[in-house]
Image (tube, rainbow, N blue to C red; front, side, top):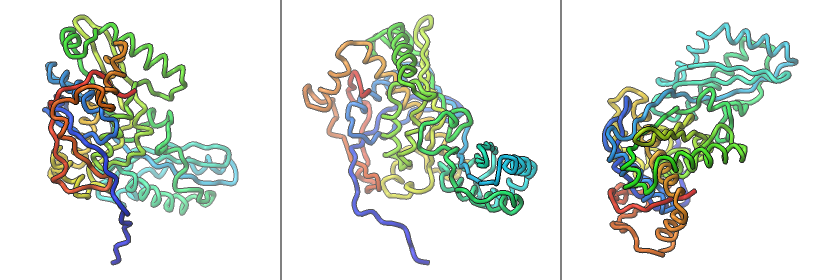
Length: 388
């Protein structure tokens, strides 16, 4: 068989640094982890490291739960009129077990979880949702949806093919439906930080951080018309980890929609980051490149003896904890006038001494690099602020 894969013309180097250790606990993963961030926003490394410091100063560290996981693909059928489309909806619902067999025949790992039809005039949109094991599941879901389309067209003569993707999925675009129905791994990270840790490591206090989170992330985001989202900069951490671990980076569009919830409590501060649609995988396209394979090994995400889906849940937990580290550090920095800009001048423009061990910055290519180039150290001196 001829190998028809496209080979790259060149590799794009992206500065990469490992942050942590981050102390994580929960049903998916417990222990200290380091996470690679590939970014040109160099203040992101020390900012996330400051959050990682906090995780190690708190009993239990950052608690992470993966509440749900699924990948969706919506197909589009065309009927003569709305009545015909609605008759097809009834027929599709009555054959659920048949569709489950169709999906199971497409992959060892794909399983049909749910079906959501929507009729708009004579157009029938059907959103299929699948479990996809350790893969993020884009191709697996599309292949299963294609098989389902053929099977449905065979028993619903009133329908014609419209498109393999009807945008009700919805992929790589901001939406409300993904947060409601789920797409990817719904992951929640939270932590309780005592007052003395806030003062010593974050140079702030619980009241100021809680007030800023409400005014900035909730009121400000509402004012801007944000869709099911209230956070400061999830996209920064998501993109950096996605690039370093071989993910489809365009999925930060929906991935960056999430909620930072903060409560001032007796003796400290409760902080949570909820990511309703964190789309990640540890197998599939991009994961077989030498540099990415080395990253997966170092993160202990390459163990194929684990049950299907466990490695990807572990990765989701690591990413959610990293998001919380960066989100917490930025909010704390923005409670202090001038701190954010000081960090950028210091780490981007050389306006102040570089952090210790700053020489241990490496480059990762979006197409993979030799494993020996993916080193790096954690536990360096950390900055006070980060990117907005």
